[in-house]
Amino acid sequence: MAEPGRSGEHRRATRRHPRARLVTQVEATTLGRTENISVGGVLVLTRETFQPGTEVTVRFTLPPDQFISATGVVVHTTPAVSMGIHFTGLKDADRKGIESYVKQTAEENRASP
Image (cartoon, rainbow, N blue to C red; front, side, top):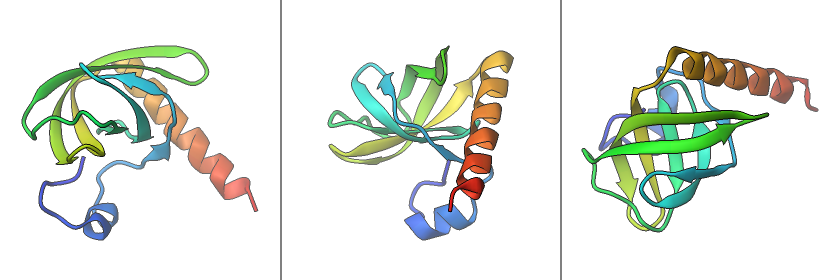
């Protein structure tokens, strides 16, 4: 995930992992929905945000039907709007599923006019 304190455009230009849009319900001690995902982490839209440094467990379903439960740490927040969570405990099968989803989504986006 991006470094705290950096502007949104700077973060997008220097990301370590490709991202894909993912809209699904996510549970991270609170309920929300994902905005995007990478093997590095997930951006969660939620009214109940946590302070950076908070350890969380996120649970969500990656299309078509891969259930993921991973530990992470909040790295940045926009209070009452969103929080970026960096995965700290992601199973290999889940990492491969996310990599595949991001790659497939990027290919579909390139194919769309």
